Image 1 (cartoon, rainbow, N blue to C red):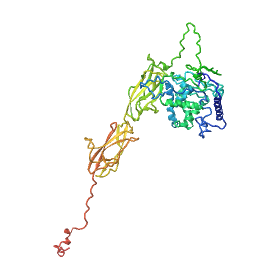
Image 2: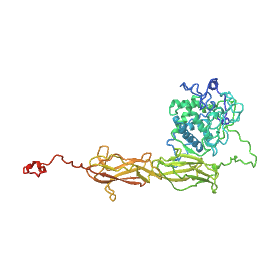
Image 3: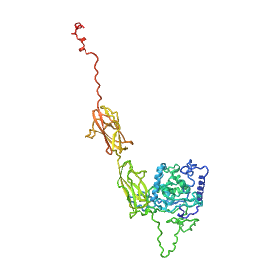
Amino acid sequence: MAAQFGRRLRKGVTTTAVAAAAVAALAASQAPGATTDSAGGQTTSDATSTPDEAIDGDGATGDSPYYTDLPPLNSPNPSPSAGTGIDTSGVTEAGIPATVLDAYKQAEATLREKKPGCNLPWQLLAAIGKVESGQARGGRVDADGTTLSPILGPQLDGNGFALIKDTDNGAYDGNSTYDQAVGPMQFIPSTWAWAGRDGNGDGREDPNNIYDAALAAGHYLCRNGWDLSVQDDLDKAILSYNNSTEYLNTVMSWLEYYRRGTHEIPDGTGTLPTDRSDRVTVPPSASAAPKPKPEHSTTPEPGTKPPGSSPSPKPPTAPGTPTTPPTTPPTPTDTVDHLENAGVARFTAMAGDTFTERMSARAETDAGRTVAKVRIRFTITGDTDTTFTGGERVATVMTDSSGVAVAPALRAGEQTGAVTVQATVAGRTVKGVSYKATVTERAADSLVRTGDTPLTCTPGGAFADAVELRATYRGEAADKVAATATLINSILDPRESDKGPYFKDADGNAVRTLSLTTDADGLLKLPPLYADETEGTFLLRVTTAGGATTTVSLTVKAAPSEPETPDPSPDPSTDPSTDPSTDPSESPAA
C-alpha cells in the first residue's frame, strides 16, 4: 500500500508474530540449498501439501498492509452491461475503472492460453487489486495503463512489518535502504524481478503499469501447478500473495462480490477504500474517548481521511487569492469527443474463415482533430460464436499517431448471420462506432469426382465402387461444406427418382436423397449404392452450398447370357449306317 494512504500505528503481539513469521520464512527461502523453479517459486518445499509450507516466504507484497474494507451487503447482481439501459450509478462499489478492468480481463485471456490448467478468473485479480490499491486508486491511470503517480507501500524495515533490505538499489521504489511494495498490485522489487511481465506490449515490465502488474499477478497466482478452480489451491495462491488469514478472507469476499456482477466506470472515478490493516479504527461508541497518538504518520491519499480524525482548519485566504484547486492537465483520452469509422463499411466472411477486412476507428476531438495514444475497445456483441483471432470477444487497441486503432482480424464462427462490433473509448462515455459483419455458410465453387471407373451394377445387386468427390473453393479444399446427393429422373427432370439405384437408411430402407458434409480435406464420400430390378442408365446429382454441382452416371444391366455349346454325339437321322434302305454291298466299287 502507498505510505501516503493513511497513518500507520505499531501493532501489538499479533502483528509482531506475523512479521516475525514472515522474516523467518524469508530467511528460509534464502537458505543454502534452496532452489527456484522457472516461475521463481521455491521448490524445496513443493513436495509437501500443507498450505503454510507451500507459500513463498515473503509473498508478492512482503506482507505489506492492505485495505480491509469489505464489499457492501447488497449484491450487484444482475451485472449491468453497456447498452442495457440499466442505471448503474447507485452500484458504486461494483464499478471497476475501465482501463483497470480491461487489464484484468486481458491477463485472464493470456493465462487461459499460456496456463489453461490454472483457471484464473479475472475477478480474482480484481479482488486483489481492490485490497492492494483500491483498483489503482480508483483508476488514476493514463492511456497506457500507468498510474499517474507511484503507489508505494511503507518501507519494510521490520518496524511493524517484515524486514526486507533493499534488493533493487531503489530502481522501482526509490528506496536504496529498504524495499517497498510497488504499483497497483503491490509487488516488492525482489518478487517483481522474476514475476514482472509486459502486459501492454510496450517492451517494458513496469510494476506501476496496471497491464504489466495484472499479468504478473496472474502468472504469480498460477505457479506451482495450482488450479484456482480448486478451493485448496485458490487459498494457497491468495495466501502466497500475502500470508494472512484476514487477507485471505478479505480477498475471498471481494472475489465472490465481483463474481455476482460488476460493470465498467470511467477511469479515475472509482471508490477509494479507507481502512487498512495497519491502522486502528476508533468505533463510533468510543468517539468521546481519548484517541491514540500514532508513532508514525503519513500523508493520506487525496479524498481519504484517517478514521477518527477531525478536519484540519483551513488557513486564511489572502484577498484576491484563487480558491479553485489546481487541476491536472487533461490526458489524450480526456480530449476525445467521438469516434469515426476509419475503414470499410461492409464485412463478410464464410463460416470458419478469417475476415479479410479489419475494423478500424479514429478518435477525434469536437473540432475534428485526431487523438493519438487513446485506448479503443472493440467488443463483439450479441449471440454469435464469431471472435477475434485470439479467441476473445473484446480487444483493446491504442490509437496510432494518426489517431486510428485497428482491431485484430475477426474469425467467423460456425453460426451464420449478422455480427455486431462496437468500438468505444476505454474510460470515457462518448459516441462510438458500430460495425455490421455477416457470416455466410461454408461453400464450394467446384465439385469433381476423384475417380473415373464406370459405375455399374446388376439388377438387385450392389455397386462395387463407392462415389467419392472433392469440393474446393477458390482452389482450396472446402471443408465442412453441406451437400445434397439425389438420384434424379433425368437432366431435364431433376426430381427424385422412384426407381433404379438407391441408398439405405439406418433401418435398411431405400432412400434416394441424402444430406452430407465434406470432411477436413474437402472430400465427400457417399455411402454404398444398391439397385432394384429396373435396368437402365440413371443419374446421381450432388450439389453443395455455394452452387457447385456434378452429375454421375450409374448403369444397371443384367449380366450377358453364356453362348450354347454344340452336342458332340451324331444325329441318328443323318448317319448312313443307321439307314436300312442303304445296302453296303451295293456301294460303288472303290
